[in-house]
Image (cartoon, rainbow, N blue to C red; front, side, top):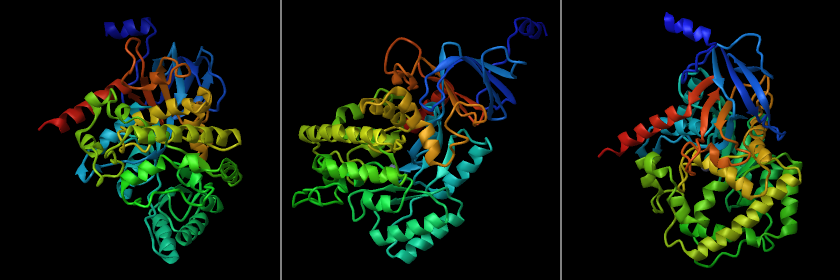
Amino acid sequence: MRYFVFLLAAGLVAQPQHGVRPARMIVKGAMVVEGTGTPAQGPLDITIENGVITQIARGSQSRPGDVEIDARGKYVLPGFINMHGHLHQERGGVPMDPNYVLKLWLACGITTVRDVGSNLQFTLDTKAKSARGEVVAPRLFAYPVLGRPGTPEAAVNRVKELKSRGVDGMKIVGAWRNTFDAAAQEASAARLPIAIHIGVEETTAADAIRNKVATIEHWYGIPDAALAAGVQNFPSTYNYMNEADRFRYAGRLWREADPKKLAAVLDGMIANNVAWDPTLEIYEASRDLQRAQNQPWFKDYLHPVLAAFFEPNLANHGSYFINWSSTDETYWKENFRLWLAAVRDFEARGGTITMGEDAGYIYQMYGFGMLRNFELHQEAGFHPLRIIKHATVNGAKVLGAEGTLGRVRAGWAADLLIVNGNPLEDFKVLYPVTPNAGTKTGIEWTIKAGFPYHVPRLMTEVKSLVDQARKP
Ligand SMILES: [Zn+2]
């Protein structure tokens, strides 16, 4: 009793409890980045009621919150929207606890994930539980893979089947032209947006543009549509099914694109509202294998099942590092330079760039891959405020959630991050494991739909999942 009186006398209000949504929460004294690309401002108090931001104002709230977070000296950003996630439950056929994936995503500030291919029923179930606050997880949008139907009729039937299961959109990969056209027509009638992963196949970005897809994932089909010779100059021994070949020569694709043709492809995307989700970081191992293999968070947080999957092995997608040479890395460095310039040019011409990670492959851990993208977008030459927009507002726009997600603004969902340090100065402050010694950094709280998650607690839980899995 005496303690209670003391609390009242000192004017202290309760701290939030991990995973418990208070009716009314106030984040006090924060520097706020709205997400639209406008400058930071503060100190401001953010009032959150029942999962929605209801007020953002300077100090002196009419009444205190049930809980309050002291955000003086901290930055508040909108929760990140990962446009290319996979809710993996296994790697290479070996089971892996999906809570590992979900907790890492939240710990790295991701409050929304567009799942572009995993176990559909599990994703739909997790999506529903997440919406009810029954699982520690981001919001999910289900974009399952169409598969590779052999005929236009089969493609139409598959789209109908996906629609009946309640998906939010779909991902198409490895498409022939006639099946892609049929699927796209049916998807458009069913109002299901398409994310297309265009590798080097019959279809290129030109087909994606014609079919007005929502996003182009990765990049290959873009320079492929701009080749002067119509086909890349592959050596006679090249085999597309051999991933060492595929990724090696992908590193020599951008240099073969004709700049004039490329500009026309980018303009075609823009004119048809096709956004670009480049997933930059998932290719970084190709230009610097040692960096990728030695990330500081692997020691305590790399799940052994994921670690085994990353080992060079042509049977596992993305584990193609067999005789990977300094020559390969040199080509890939040039490839990145040309690619980053195209991404930058795309936005300058009016295009929409989003951010997605594709983690769970090629030495990228869930969440950490997303954060590495902030640095790579910076390397492409974007201002930090624009980069935050890529990861928030632009994703919301492409998901059709422009009016509810992606901003720190009254009326929007309470998906926000309370960050130790200034991410506009240094994106490395976002990592839950600091690569820099010294000051305290990392996201302190990830709030999703008003549910506060304490990031140090999430990381402790991730570590114990990893410790358990590592036991012989
Ligand atoms: Zn993917």
